[in-house]
Image (cartoon, rainbow over all chains, first blue to last red; front, top):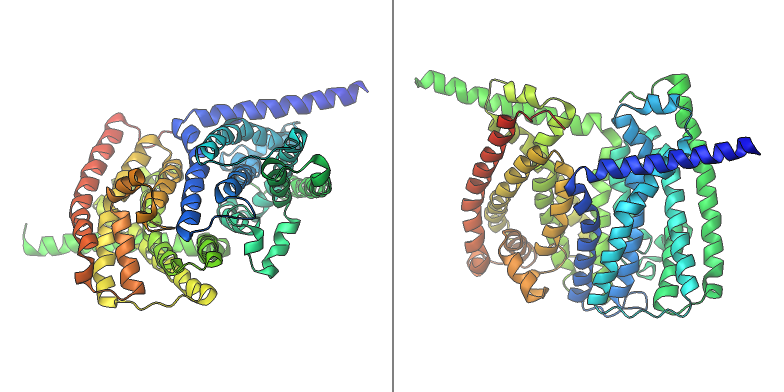
Length: 273
Length: 270
């Protein structure tokens, strides 16, 4: 029992220490603090004016400004999943510290989650605050019937993003071209998952992707709870599916991190280009 | 300078530019390999699809505009991400001091690198145009001689931005972060997803204070309607002005920033 407690407490400490380190590294450069929230917000405005220029009054049964608000939250979480948690092991490799990381007794998973938590604090949270402010300025009509549903949908969305980051952290390093893949993955997901355009606008054969992609389910649930007055019962099935997919992602991510550890220890080639 | 020495000097600089281009080409295509090719060919299609689907579902005729504007905007992205990050990229790789010490002008190897970026940009722009025609049934009626005049003017008008970003990137040691901050501003104000005339007045006036919207709109009208250059004077006069002023401002800004970084002895530090 005490061993389990010590392990949990150790994992938590690694998690928090990594998050603190990530935050310190980021805030050391003012431009990093500014640009993370600025990018999705400026993209929000660009897409909003695109809908205006196209003469569209609705997107997915709500106003474009409302649709994009949740889409921008999805984009922010997706970017965070890619560039913080997903990029965690690659960041250590790039900094030349990956071998030290694998020699330490720290949980690799805790390090990945620490990066993600750091990004949630300094990237996702400020973006959300400013995005909500902008949504109010653009006249978004909120229709919240069940605040618990909003909290649950948002929580499930964050969990899904963390699970995706966990999966990507091992996958990116094993590709050895993490930066390329990370850059490439952003835009297709914006399109295919219902972040920038409603999934219904896509050709039917592309719509299946959104069904399986966890952030899409989370955004559907959040749009329902935040914009169309859905209750927790209305979105329960989506949330359960989302949590099951997230669990599967964590299991797959754990396996991939094992492969990374194998490459580091047995093959000794992980820090090579 | 005797004529023979001058000829040798020019030949050396051209060789430096050629070798720099070759190195950059090899780095991008051989070192980064298939992942880069994937990014290079598919990402522009997804970027186009996002904007085009918004117009397509509304049955808007502006879909042709967005196809051409996105193709042209690749020149902007090349100025920001490729040329604007040249020096900081070399600094991160640890090769910047060596490049500064090579016995040729800095402009030579930087021009070689930039030329690799322009070729890559033309490739990306072609992908966007072909995707627009195949996926969204866009038909173009280009005024090719007109484009041959306007595209170089647009490139020149962007050169100042690229050079200034290059210098600032070297100063703040975070060129990519700077690019990621600047590019969404210029997407918004550059008329990449919509003509800037659809923006609210304050943003419209800001947009018109920059060269991007003039270049992109002129290219769009030449490529879609086959407009004559004489019909585009409202766009071409400001664009030509930017094409003259921008490189001068860029060179002055770059020189000042470059001197500052070297005086501080910060070329290599983080």
